[in-house]
Image (cartoon, rainbow, N blue to C red; front, top):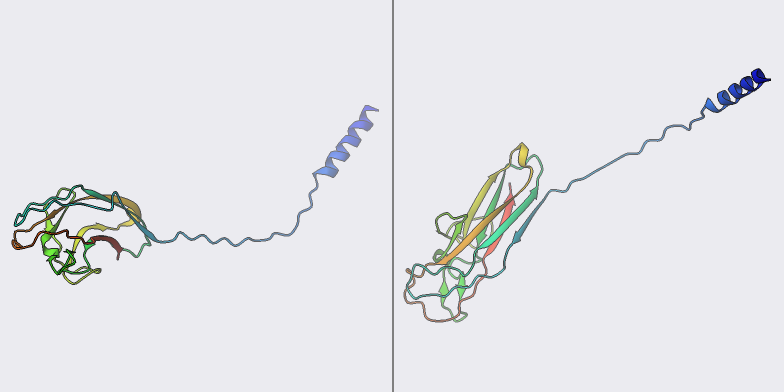
Length: 177
């Protein structure tokens, strides 16, 4: 009897061991990582208390610009720019009195103060400054950096600027080439 049970059990196990499979079906996969650059500023305003004819009129605060990127292998560098829409009127009192971009200065990461007098891809002619260049190599196609900017308005070249409230917009923009 024990032999009969062993034979039946073996036959049943063997019957379950045989598998039936369907035909194979393929799933096509596509994944895209979009190229992107983002820029975040730590603040959106800087105030100045101006002294007529003075070369030193520092801004009330520094601003940090954090750039993050994911780039294609064909990109060679990342450039950070500051610019105004006009070289002759970076800041204006609205009555025809202007502070030119050549009087507005930026210090990037503790470096020397430089005026916005260069041609850059954005903004007005000769109203910009390239703040930084990041070479993009194989190991940094994805990355981030933070630049800290300090500001100054040099009024030594505009000693007859009348009293008033002068407003303007400085733009920071990043470009991958």
